[in-house]
Structure formats: C-alpha cells, structure tokens
Length: 96
Image (cartoon, rainbow, N blue to C red; front, side, top):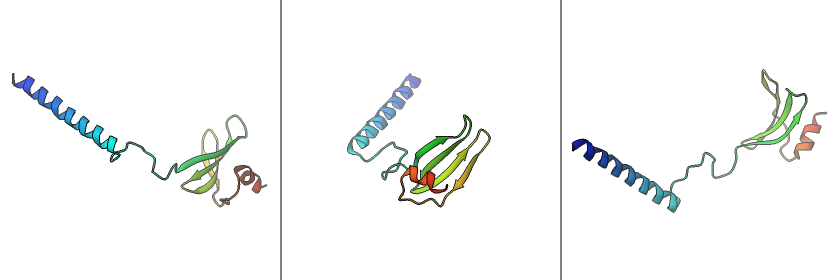
C-alpha cells in the first residue's frame, strides 16, 4: 500500500508542475525558444559553390558580416572587414 501511495503522490506533483507550466506559458511568463527576442544572431546571406567540396559563405553573425571558405577538411575565415550596408552580391564582388 505504501508504494502505491508514493506513486500517486509523484503523479500529483508532476500534474501540479505541468499545470503551473501550462499557466505560465499561457500568460507569456515562460517561453521555450533558443532565439533571443531581437531575432536571429546567425544568418547565411549567400552561398556560392566553387567545386562539389568547396564553397564560399557570406554569413552575418550578431550584426557582423564575414566571408568563410569551406572545404571537406577545414573552414577558414577569409574576410571579416566587409561593409555592412551592401547587398550580398555586391559584397562578394567587392574583393575582385
């Protein structure tokens, strides 16, 4: 009888926690999002394949635009001083 009573108490505690969580989510006090309220911190602006295994990626990381080269064995930061106000196509052709 004691084991059944303990199991019922555990179920009651979980039900109370679930109800409290549901109430807090409904009121907007609790959210389960990995993103910040301000939006995405990592965004791929453009990708240009060079070969089947190599590519250039133009990426915005927390408001900073960087150019990254990828290969099967490595990922290399190529440029981090790219202008913010240009379109992705202009950014890629800016270095030529």
